[in-house]
Image (cartoon, rainbow, N blue to C red; front, side, top):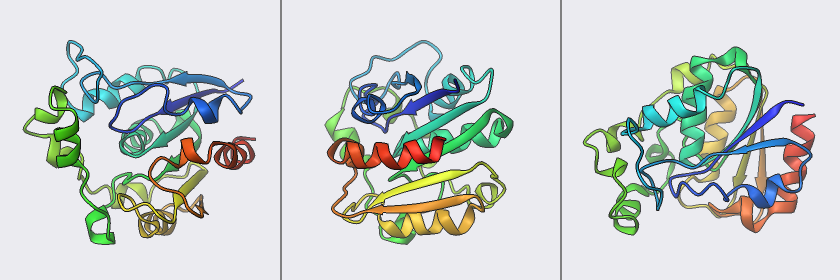
Length: 201
């Protein structure tokens, strides 16, 4: 069975994807992010690039990746480094390396820093730059079959972002969830799990 990596957003909570994962017949590996949200820091983990390294270190064989929000950016950065190790990709309400602000999305980073003032990574001088990196040209090279899950009521990553990714990624399909916000994997777990189940077959 292919291992499935579940990547949360900047809240770094390893339980974020469990309502969905528990409905799937997969070998699940749930990530948290040291130094983000309420997660304590870890030696040698000081940036988004270090978080990408944590994911890459588990990719010693082909995997499926399911990622939300900031986790989607981390997933894209991992896929660009090891495309041959990713069998299927699911991206939910994420920037994934496209300029969200240009597409009507609100900037979540300052609110995140206020919500988690003791998290060490967001205090890094490279935080703002690294989380707004534009990977549009590189994304267009990704050939991994990709499911894009978006809610039509998400102000952080609006549907226009999903549509942009759909136009960039040749092997992608966009599924819009009515009433879905940035936490759609929890509020619409059964629906989201159904879409993912079909994609991972």
